[in-house]
Length: 169
Image 1 (cartoon, rainbow, N blue to C red):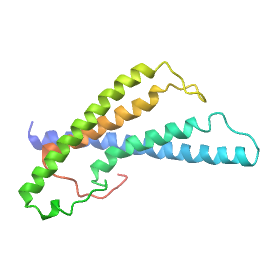
Image 2: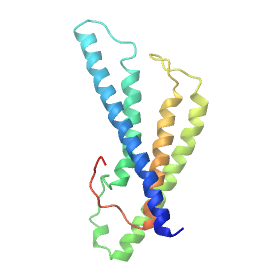
Image 3: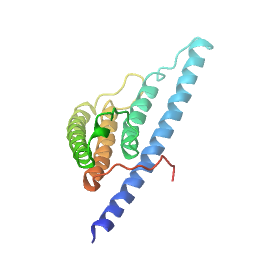
Image 4: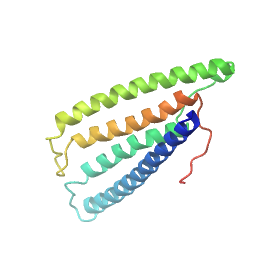
């Protein structure tokens, strides 16, 4: 297989993972918004509170954030100050990009590793308001950062950032 064929397959796998991540972000944000509105209604109109009105939005928010990170990496949508880097030569910019990618991959990999360990340690603990494991928080951290590492790997393989714009295709 040629390098281009492998890269195309890698991109296809990343595309599927990105669509799944995008769906997770959309669903969790919709649930988060709905539950928060419901919680406000119950608290201020019904003068009562939902027992799960804090835990569900918290889980949804964390899952949405952790699956937004790889999407931001894919489209180079993260905030950065490139004032100095833009003044470098093309070769130095590529080296800077590679160094940055390696450091992000190491950090993301380490955090994902410890998230898996913490997920195992906390899986038997339930949240107070809903019968869901505390390990679910760490699962989103591990999955989101592994997905991020896959995007960083693409940057390291190709040596370039994608300049495409966000699209739902």
